[in-house]
Length: 285
Image (cartoon, rainbow, N blue to C red; front, side):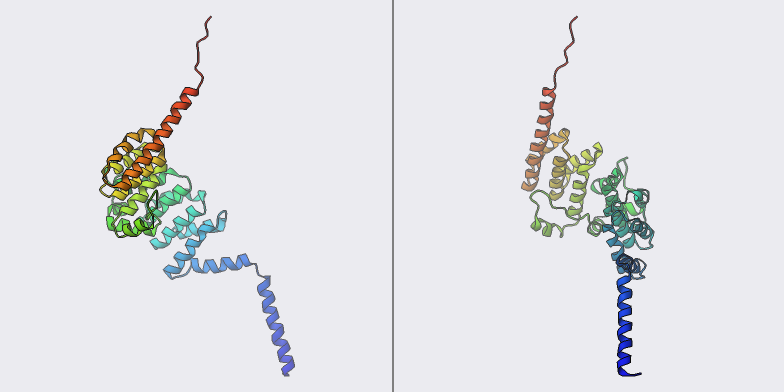
């Protein structure tokens, strides 16, 4: 073949390949890449690919992929799938996430609980209540098996950071506190659990926060509990907050003071609203 003809053929082939690539749907090509990760035999690659599904809101194919990953034989993948379902606001996956609360691995349980809360399902609070108090809302100790492991300080600390339940800064707690308490056993995780319960409407969680605020040995947890009490906005917990004004740790004392002020303002606001309501007089005949 003449050099000129050979060159022309090569150029034609290159142009054909480029045209083929340009003609492909980038979205389909992207799904091909992602699916290769989702089905990869390497655990790390599979976990990473599943985690990326969380950004794909309103995508049925992504939901299906995450639900499939929720059945994976590796807990790391199942945990990533549960978290992704919460991040993508997959409300249709609530039944599967509730079922995941009985998973054989506590990492998956924590991830499923967090996902349920993101989806507006209060059942997720049950797990965080257990983490903070060491018992179930219905009474008694933690369940046997994987949920019993939530009562293991070292395991809990590890699980907490794996599932995003690690230290959550609040109030005056900054980076220095974070660096210090990552050396602690479970204070950061318990503090995060307390802050999570601030939004739980169940009165039992309010009682749990009051108990943690006054009786927890770790001051970071007490401070977090008072911060959660303030955010909860329940004036019935004001007495607990007042007791915290005598705490020996200044961070706790400040958190308690803020809680007292907030609850007093809420209490005062309720009183003002009650006074502003027009009185109903019985008409005289």
